[in-house]
Length: 218
Image 1 (tube, helix red, strand yellow):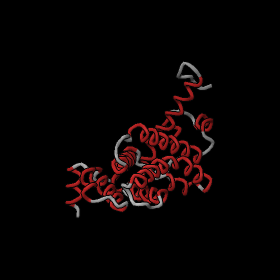
Image 2 (tube, rainbow, N blue to C red):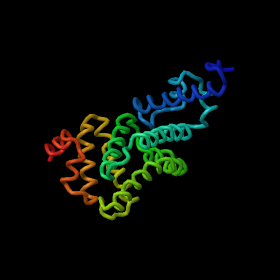
Image 3 (cartoon, rainbow, N blue to C red):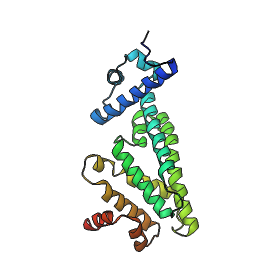
């Protein structure tokens, strides 16, 4: 019988689950997604393999739960921190910034890559949990087109392209090959200019230090 480390069984299970998720986070950072095993996770979380299997039946289920947790936290942060009452261009810039900060905070393979490594069923499940982020960005792009800030481009496809561009910066950021401010400025400028926003307007949105970093790299 495992020792209960919380006032109630429900609280104990929640606490243990948090330890498991923290263990997965650390192991992915140190070993990579392919090398971790259920035994590794159990040892890092300070529980037995049997206890771990009581929470997750296999590695795909474990990684799916971890990715769902990370994505849910991202979406909640976006909803909480994306500015309201400002232009769509500023909201898009803030969205890109939060995405890039998320990559630095959680330098794990993107959901699509995880799903591809775990099989088609996991891919579909992961895609469903990534969808809210793309919807948020799609809404920003649609808003900009409605108000005349952005050219009328297919909003959902444009959002997907933007997220792909952000994702392409994951490894350079994690490996400290590029800096966060300069990357935010570059991606934001590229996307806003593609959406038809004038250079002068983009310059008013990006911080002056970020503009200098972008200009120096030209």
